[in-house]
Image (cartoon, rainbow over all chains, first blue to last red; front, side, top):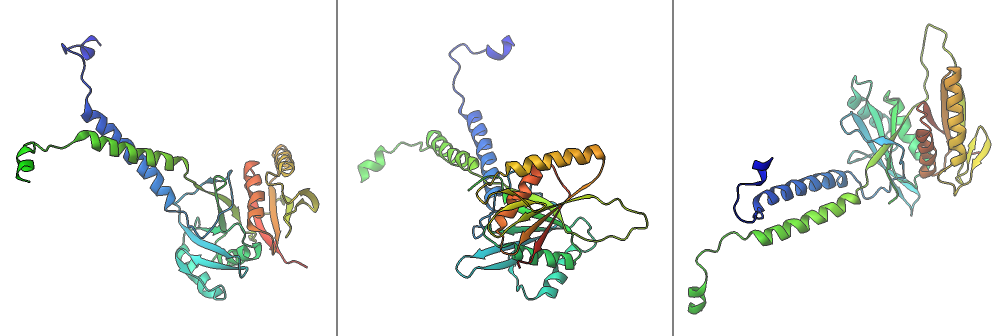
Length: 146
Length: 147
Protein backbone atom coordinates (compact mmCIF):
# COMPACT_ATOMS: atom_id res chain seq x y z
CA UNK A 1 0.00 0.00 0.00
CA UNK A 2 2.76 2.39 0.90
CA UNK A 3 4.52 1.66 -2.34
CA UNK A 4 1.48 2.67 -4.37
CA UNK A 5 1.31 6.22 -3.10
CA UNK A 6 4.97 7.00 -2.60
CA UNK A 7 7.84 7.10 -4.96
CA UNK A 8 7.57 10.68 -6.22
CA UNK A 9 9.55 13.34 -4.47
CA UNK A 10 7.36 16.32 -5.45
CA UNK A 11 3.64 16.99 -5.50
CA UNK A 12 1.68 14.26 -7.41
CA UNK A 13 0.96 15.56 -10.89
CA UNK A 14 -2.45 15.54 -12.53
CA UNK A 15 -2.40 12.83 -15.21
CA UNK A 16 -4.32 13.78 -18.33
CA UNK A 17 -4.00 10.53 -20.31
CA UNK A 18 -5.98 8.25 -17.91
CA UNK A 19 -8.60 10.94 -17.54
CA UNK A 20 -9.11 11.02 -21.31
CA UNK A 21 -9.41 7.23 -21.30
CA UNK A 22 -12.16 7.36 -18.69
CA UNK A 23 -13.94 10.21 -20.46
CA UNK A 24 -13.94 8.38 -23.78
CA UNK A 25 -15.30 5.20 -22.19
CA UNK A 26 -18.10 7.18 -20.53
CA UNK A 27 -18.80 8.97 -23.80
CA UNK A 28 -19.09 5.72 -25.72
CA UNK A 29 -21.33 4.26 -23.01
CA UNK A 30 -23.79 7.16 -23.10
CA UNK A 31 -23.71 7.30 -26.90
CA UNK A 32 -24.59 3.63 -27.18
CA UNK A 33 -27.47 3.67 -24.70
CA UNK A 34 -29.10 6.76 -26.21
CA UNK A 35 -28.80 5.96 -29.90
CA UNK A 36 -29.92 2.33 -29.58
CA UNK A 37 -33.18 3.39 -27.94
CA UNK A 38 -33.98 6.47 -29.98
CA UNK A 39 -33.74 4.66 -33.31
CA UNK A 40 -36.57 2.29 -32.46
CA UNK A 41 -39.16 4.99 -31.95
CA UNK A 42 -41.33 5.64 -34.96
CA UNK A 43 -42.28 9.30 -34.71
CA UNK A 44 -45.57 8.91 -36.57
CA UNK A 45 -46.94 6.61 -33.90
CA UNK A 46 -47.72 7.90 -30.45
CA UNK A 47 -47.60 4.78 -28.35
CA UNK A 48 -49.72 4.38 -25.20
CA UNK A 49 -48.12 3.80 -21.81
CA UNK A 50 -47.45 0.25 -20.62
CA UNK A 51 -45.25 0.77 -17.59
CA UNK A 52 -45.76 -2.75 -16.23
CA UNK A 53 -44.92 -4.59 -19.41
CA UNK A 54 -41.70 -6.44 -19.99
CA UNK A 55 -38.85 -4.88 -21.91
CA UNK A 56 -39.09 -5.53 -25.62
CA UNK A 57 -37.11 -8.55 -26.65
CA UNK A 58 -35.61 -7.68 -30.02
CA UNK A 59 -33.84 -11.01 -30.35
CA UNK A 60 -37.00 -13.12 -30.46
CA UNK A 61 -38.51 -13.52 -33.92
CA UNK A 62 -41.49 -11.28 -34.46
CA UNK A 63 -43.62 -9.80 -37.21
CA UNK A 64 -43.86 -6.11 -36.46
CA UNK A 65 -47.08 -4.39 -37.48
CA UNK A 66 -47.11 -0.61 -37.16
CA UNK A 67 -50.58 0.93 -37.04
CA UNK A 68 -50.64 4.70 -37.37
CA UNK A 69 -53.76 6.78 -36.92
CA UNK A 70 -54.88 9.56 -39.21
CA UNK A 71 -56.97 11.91 -37.06
CA UNK A 72 -58.37 13.83 -40.02
CA UNK A 73 -59.84 10.82 -41.81
CA UNK A 74 -60.28 8.62 -38.75
CA UNK A 75 -58.56 5.75 -40.53
CA UNK A 76 -55.66 3.53 -39.61
CA UNK A 77 -52.64 2.84 -41.80
CA UNK A 78 -50.84 -0.45 -41.53
CA UNK A 79 -47.19 -1.21 -42.10
CA UNK A 80 -45.41 -4.54 -41.83
CA UNK A 81 -41.99 -3.31 -40.69
CA UNK A 82 -41.47 -0.48 -43.22
CA UNK A 83 -43.70 -1.80 -45.96
CA UNK A 84 -47.16 -0.30 -46.28
CA UNK A 85 -49.98 -2.83 -46.27
CA UNK A 86 -53.30 -2.85 -48.05
CA UNK A 87 -55.81 -3.86 -45.34
CA UNK A 88 -58.07 -5.43 -47.98
CA UNK A 89 -55.35 -7.87 -49.06
CA UNK A 90 -55.98 -10.21 -46.15
CA UNK A 91 -54.66 -13.31 -47.91
CA UNK A 92 -51.46 -11.63 -49.07
CA UNK A 93 -50.65 -10.33 -45.59
CA UNK A 94 -51.44 -13.65 -43.92
CA UNK A 95 -49.25 -15.51 -46.40
CA UNK A 96 -46.39 -13.08 -45.81
CA UNK A 97 -46.72 -13.56 -42.03
CA UNK A 98 -46.93 -17.32 -42.46
CA UNK A 99 -43.77 -17.27 -44.56
CA UNK A 100 -41.96 -15.27 -41.89
CA UNK A 101 -43.18 -17.55 -39.16
CA UNK A 102 -41.97 -20.71 -40.91
CA UNK A 103 -41.92 -23.52 -38.37
CA UNK A 104 -41.18 -21.28 -35.41
CA UNK A 105 -43.90 -21.87 -32.81
CA UNK A 106 -42.60 -19.03 -30.66
CA UNK A 107 -42.97 -16.49 -33.45
CA UNK A 108 -45.07 -13.58 -32.24
CA UNK A 109 -46.96 -10.72 -33.72
CA UNK A 110 -45.80 -7.40 -32.30
CA UNK A 111 -48.40 -4.65 -32.57
CA UNK A 112 -47.21 -1.05 -32.40
CA UNK A 113 -50.36 1.00 -32.62
CA UNK A 114 -51.16 4.65 -32.06
CA UNK A 115 -52.91 5.40 -28.78
CA UNK A 116 -55.92 6.94 -30.59
CA UNK A 117 -56.42 3.98 -32.88
CA UNK A 118 -59.77 2.20 -32.56
CA UNK A 119 -59.88 -1.38 -31.32
CA UNK A 120 -61.46 -2.72 -34.52
CA UNK A 121 -58.27 -1.85 -36.46
CA UNK A 122 -56.19 -3.75 -33.92
CA UNK A 123 -58.58 -6.65 -34.28
CA UNK A 124 -57.98 -6.67 -38.03
CA UNK A 125 -54.22 -7.08 -37.49
CA UNK A 126 -54.93 -9.89 -35.02
CA UNK A 127 -57.08 -11.60 -37.64
CA UNK A 128 -54.14 -11.63 -40.06
CA UNK A 129 -52.02 -13.17 -37.33
CA UNK A 130 -54.66 -15.79 -36.62
CA UNK A 131 -54.88 -16.66 -40.34
CA UNK A 132 -51.11 -17.14 -40.37
CA UNK A 133 -51.34 -19.40 -37.30
CA UNK A 134 -49.69 -16.93 -34.91
CA UNK A 135 -51.31 -16.87 -31.49
CA UNK A 136 -48.61 -15.08 -29.50
CA UNK A 137 -49.45 -11.42 -29.55
CA UNK A 138 -47.50 -8.61 -27.93
CA UNK A 139 -48.68 -5.02 -27.70
CA UNK A 140 -46.04 -2.30 -27.57
CA UNK A 141 -46.18 0.63 -25.18
CA UNK A 142 -43.83 3.15 -23.64
CA UNK A 143 -42.36 2.78 -20.18
CA UNK A 144 -43.60 6.26 -19.24
CA UNK A 145 -45.70 9.15 -20.46
CA UNK A 146 -44.26 11.30 -23.27
CA UNK B 1 2.33 39.11 -42.83
CA UNK B 2 5.94 38.11 -42.90
CA UNK B 3 6.32 39.30 -39.33
CA UNK B 4 3.44 37.09 -38.15
CA UNK B 5 4.88 34.00 -39.81
CA UNK B 6 8.20 34.46 -38.12
CA UNK B 7 6.61 34.84 -34.67
CA UNK B 8 4.58 31.62 -34.90
CA UNK B 9 5.82 28.96 -32.45
CA UNK B 10 7.73 26.14 -34.01
CA UNK B 11 5.78 23.44 -32.15
CA UNK B 12 2.04 23.70 -32.91
CA UNK B 13 1.41 20.49 -30.97
CA UNK B 14 -1.83 18.70 -30.14
CA UNK B 15 -3.83 20.74 -27.60
CA UNK B 16 -5.34 18.54 -24.93
CA UNK B 17 -7.34 21.16 -23.01
CA UNK B 18 -9.83 22.11 -25.79
CA UNK B 19 -10.26 18.44 -26.61
CA UNK B 20 -11.25 17.68 -23.03
CA UNK B 21 -13.69 20.61 -23.16
CA UNK B 22 -15.35 19.23 -26.27
CA UNK B 23 -15.49 15.68 -24.91
CA UNK B 24 -17.08 17.00 -21.71
CA UNK B 25 -19.76 18.86 -23.64
CA UNK B 26 -20.55 15.83 -25.83
CA UNK B 27 -20.67 13.61 -22.77
CA UNK B 28 -23.01 15.98 -20.95
CA UNK B 29 -25.29 16.00 -24.00
CA UNK B 30 -25.49 12.21 -24.08
CA UNK B 31 -25.95 12.01 -20.31
CA UNK B 32 -28.94 14.36 -20.50
CA UNK B 33 -30.35 12.46 -23.48
CA UNK B 34 -29.97 9.16 -21.63
CA UNK B 35 -32.33 10.43 -18.92
CA UNK B 36 -35.01 11.27 -21.46
CA UNK B 37 -34.87 7.94 -23.27
CA UNK B 38 -38.17 6.13 -23.56
CA UNK B 39 -37.95 2.37 -23.66
CA UNK B 40 -40.54 0.28 -25.39
CA UNK B 41 -42.26 -2.29 -23.24
CA UNK B 42 -44.57 -5.02 -24.40
CA UNK B 43 -47.66 -6.66 -22.97
CA UNK B 44 -48.14 -10.24 -24.02
CA UNK B 45 -51.47 -11.85 -24.80
CA UNK B 46 -52.65 -14.85 -26.75
CA UNK B 47 -55.39 -15.18 -29.28
CA UNK B 48 -58.46 -17.14 -28.24
CA UNK B 49 -58.36 -20.48 -30.03
CA UNK B 50 -59.38 -24.11 -29.78
CA UNK B 51 -57.23 -27.13 -29.19
CA UNK B 52 -58.12 -30.76 -29.71
CA UNK B 53 -57.24 -32.93 -26.77
CA UNK B 54 -57.88 -36.56 -26.00
CA UNK B 55 -58.10 -35.93 -22.27
CA UNK B 56 -60.78 -34.03 -20.48
CA UNK B 57 -59.57 -30.52 -19.82
CA UNK B 58 -60.36 -28.45 -16.80
CA UNK B 59 -62.21 -25.30 -17.73
CA UNK B 60 -60.62 -22.18 -16.32
CA UNK B 61 -62.46 -19.45 -14.43
CA UNK B 62 -63.34 -17.03 -17.15
CA UNK B 63 -63.51 -13.33 -16.47
CA UNK B 64 -64.50 -10.74 -19.05
CA UNK B 65 -63.32 -7.17 -18.83
CA UNK B 66 -65.24 -4.85 -21.09
CA UNK B 67 -63.89 -1.62 -22.55
CA UNK B 68 -66.54 0.66 -23.98
CA UNK B 69 -66.34 3.25 -26.71
CA UNK B 70 -66.48 6.02 -24.13
CA UNK B 71 -63.64 4.51 -22.11
CA UNK B 72 -65.64 2.92 -19.31
CA UNK B 73 -64.23 -0.32 -17.98
CA UNK B 74 -66.45 -3.09 -16.63
CA UNK B 75 -65.75 -6.40 -14.96
CA UNK B 76 -68.29 -9.08 -15.92
CA UNK B 77 -70.69 -6.27 -16.90
CA UNK B 78 -70.28 -4.41 -13.58
CA UNK B 79 -68.92 -0.90 -14.15
CA UNK B 80 -65.55 -0.54 -12.49
CA UNK B 81 -63.58 2.30 -14.00
CA UNK B 82 -64.55 5.77 -15.17
CA UNK B 83 -63.09 6.99 -18.49
CA UNK B 84 -60.71 9.39 -16.73
CA UNK B 85 -59.39 6.76 -14.33
CA UNK B 86 -56.12 5.64 -15.93
CA UNK B 87 -54.71 3.78 -12.93
CA UNK B 88 -57.83 1.59 -12.49
CA UNK B 89 -57.08 0.85 -8.87
CA UNK B 90 -60.47 -0.86 -8.38
CA UNK B 91 -59.82 -3.28 -11.22
CA UNK B 92 -56.31 -3.94 -9.94
CA UNK B 93 -57.45 -4.91 -6.43
CA UNK B 94 -60.21 -7.15 -7.84
CA UNK B 95 -57.71 -8.85 -10.17
CA UNK B 96 -55.21 -9.45 -7.38
CA UNK B 97 -57.96 -10.99 -5.23
CA UNK B 98 -59.10 -13.21 -8.09
CA UNK B 99 -55.55 -14.33 -8.84
CA UNK B 100 -54.95 -15.25 -5.20
CA UNK B 101 -58.26 -17.11 -5.03
CA UNK B 102 -57.40 -19.01 -8.23
CA UNK B 103 -53.95 -19.89 -6.86
CA UNK B 104 -55.47 -21.22 -3.64
CA UNK B 105 -58.09 -23.23 -5.50
CA UNK B 106 -55.39 -24.37 -7.96
CA UNK B 107 -57.47 -23.38 -10.92
CA UNK B 108 -56.48 -21.42 -13.97
CA UNK B 109 -57.77 -17.96 -14.67
CA UNK B 110 -58.66 -16.82 -18.14
CA UNK B 111 -59.16 -13.13 -18.68
CA UNK B 112 -60.79 -11.88 -21.85
CA UNK B 113 -60.48 -8.21 -22.61
CA UNK B 114 -63.45 -7.40 -24.77
CA UNK B 115 -63.32 -3.99 -26.37
CA UNK B 116 -65.99 -2.29 -28.40
CA UNK B 117 -65.09 -1.55 -32.02
CA UNK B 118 -64.55 2.16 -31.48
CA UNK B 119 -62.83 1.82 -28.09
CA UNK B 120 -59.50 3.62 -28.01
CA UNK B 121 -56.39 1.47 -28.04
CA UNK B 122 -54.93 3.51 -25.18
CA UNK B 123 -57.81 2.44 -22.93
CA UNK B 124 -57.30 -1.21 -23.87
CA UNK B 125 -53.62 -0.82 -23.00
CA UNK B 126 -54.57 0.70 -19.62
CA UNK B 127 -56.49 -2.49 -18.85
CA UNK B 128 -53.72 -4.78 -20.14
CA UNK B 129 -51.22 -2.82 -18.06
CA UNK B 130 -53.30 -3.33 -14.91
CA UNK B 131 -53.42 -7.07 -15.65
CA UNK B 132 -49.64 -7.14 -16.09
CA UNK B 133 -49.31 -5.28 -12.78
CA UNK B 134 -51.54 -7.87 -11.10
CA UNK B 135 -49.27 -10.58 -12.59
CA UNK B 136 -52.00 -12.18 -14.65
CA UNK B 137 -50.63 -13.77 -17.78
CA UNK B 138 -53.50 -15.75 -19.28
CA UNK B 139 -55.07 -12.88 -21.18
CA UNK B 140 -56.89 -12.87 -24.49
CA UNK B 141 -58.11 -9.91 -26.47
CA UNK B 142 -61.29 -9.71 -28.48
CA UNK B 143 -63.31 -6.99 -30.13
CA UNK B 144 -67.07 -7.05 -29.96
CA UNK B 145 -69.28 -5.46 -32.58
CA UNK B 146 -71.14 -2.39 -31.41
CA UNK B 147 -74.90 -2.78 -31.57
